[in-house]
Image 1 (tube, rainbow, N blue to C red):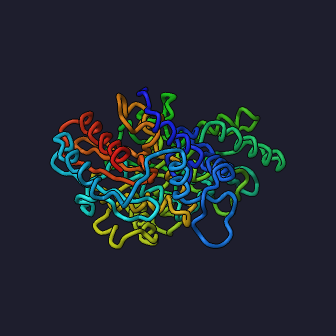
Image 2 (image 1 turned 90 degrees about the vertical axis):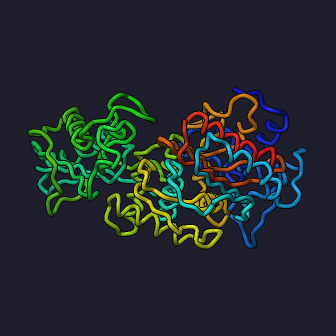
Image 3 (image 1 turned 45 degrees about the horizontal axis):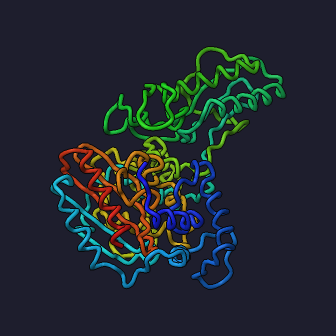
Length: 471
């Protein structure tokens, strides 16, 4: 772990007390209720720091305060003050770093004030490029805007009136665990006992999703399971919970067979093997398991760059929009939902294309300016529903996909939060940073035709770190 300078520790401590408003907290704990915890901490921090309110009318005590409050706290603690918008200085600092051979032949950069959305630096910022996993920012924003942070994904058991047939229906929750199936089995068994039912036939229903269930990168890939509306633990078979991992070729069938075993364990006689079928007419819900809130799923998606949850978020957006729940329908739904946001500048979606929710598809296209526009909206106190986009970003040197980056004398640890993106020849980074002057900036750096991953990542990290010392 790099040794942090005194001003970094001072600024980081202040920002930690205003985690949600500034979006630059050090480690705020796991994604489970992370947003809610940060908001409670923020309310307490307000009482301690007297952060200014920058909106008219009454404010809910749990509502995040805008980032300018963080600036006041940081300045009061002795961080150097920022004068002007700093755009000229940023150009001097960033332009030479963007010329690094490690960033390949194509680079795009955008830096904006996260409070106002004003552009502070741009270089090819409107050019659409392959974003890799930074597209998850767009996926997360669209899902939260469409469904709200409290939405939960349901897995349901339906039964015929006579209790002779039951169906396990997937709702698109890739995080369903064996414990959830055990609870479903107990509730189903209770219903069957009340009915006086005997042996039951079990089916499983994956009809919620349409189109191909194999990601365009191909089957057998350890980065993503088959995209189906029913699975347990993202179809992982090796005990892993994030990153690459062995995946079952039949996640829905495996989930149904596990459910059958749980039913038998609580005394239900299940005849034969589970079969794939839609629920028959007249079947009614008798048990339901709910996912964590959407805000928590978004945090987990961004922290760990979770491809399976990202694809599920895109499909939930399609469901909310009434689009076909497929790769194509989800892409259209994400685009349309983002188009409804009041983005900081006109035309940020020009040329954008969403082929999937995870960024594994190289035909995804976004601009650096779109990513910074979305991050600025997530920091906007008028959009508290988007706040988990900020709280879910990995913290440089501490968590998620940035836990092993920003070593040595880097200025980034604790003050940079960013989503990473990596494909062969593509390296990207988009997130937020707190400058020495206490300004919260949103940034996006996209690079294509990069010759080697590690030098490219180091160059991107250097760009983000330069925002701290140069902003």
